[in-house]
Image (cartoon, rainbow, N blue to C red; front, top):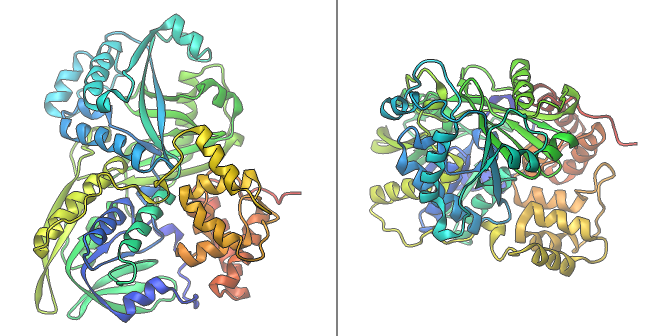
Length: 584
């Protein structure tokens, strides 16, 4: 969790069934600390094996690095240059798998690389490959190297021929397809990866899959806003971050998946470590129709002149631009700085020189710390994106308790990584794997419509009463086929859409409170919906949504006012949003 979203509030909150379950039985076979995608993925996998598992997250699920990604599910073509062939193979296998298992959130992404030279980087590349380090001044790769890389990438990633081969175009064809490109371009190369437009909701789907696997058995419990404060003779010390209440919890195995905070968590557990060396990545989201049109439906992915990999790609009617790769100071919150915004504007100008971007076009910004291993690489971009699992032990209640710490990890490989971690835990417990997740649909990806026409047919079937086509389409986008559960809840009682947005209703807010562990108002704005990401948050919406949450969550007038203030502070300071004026 990023500490900036903790209010420090100790006022009473409504009873949380998830937290009550930890209180009533403060023991499990496995305790997972960290509710990003890798911790949640491990939770799901262990629950499917019938293991008694509990998970705690200091903030909200997917609040840290998992929620600050570039929204890509990709094989990592650049990892080839580092010689990380195992990681590339695993990444493209998992990319192709997620396209099938989570089609509601993971979509094919056409990617175009503009290339401005033919042989640039040829001399430096072999040295980078042999040493895994940048040699001399960074230089962008030319067509020759990119062609070799994409040919190798094809061999790893084509999924039996289902993924198209890469395609090279010369200058004339490139400018015909993308007329706003820098006229100095010599070639473009096009290939396919994938994007995840709702990483926060995909994380929730994975979590709920784990909870449902243990339905009626009370053996898969998870609670957000519960932090680890230390360790004692009676177990791991936990604190309810909403009320300040503390309690102890025991487990036979502890799994530390707190990302860039792994070392800090190990210190709290009494086993200091020096595993991590994360880097900060920042992004901006633009409302800029001309830039959206210039991309022509393709992500623009390239290496800037300073050697950084950067991207410009359309997400709905917005354009995401990222990312930086600088050493992170864990004593400071990760935010997108003015310097980084200027850098993004410069790189857009490099690719599309005729398009002018101003700060008024920015509707959202965000930054996170990648959970990378400690490394002495001079260029952070060359730090390995692979992962490893470190084992140590702590004496708790007179017993040696194994602690498994995840070092590294990326969004694309979360399922395989979770499988690896689960297998290690099963080995410690002396259990055998009984269920594979390799072909198991995730949440609302089960029975998701295969084509655009199938989606429209699904939407039409569920239109009724106050649920018009646009509303049903929004629910399918947000929940996948789990939207059927939401629709059933909405139609079971009197409902009303909010005045400040037609994308939410009072009963949908109630549904989120009942099923999605809402701790703060900001959870709904950023992680249960994409309203903040798309720059759709207004002062009116913040107030109306807080009032809608107050009843189901038991907030009094004072707590509701605190939540409104907190939401404004988070959006303004950490996401560059002065909140827009109320809708007239």
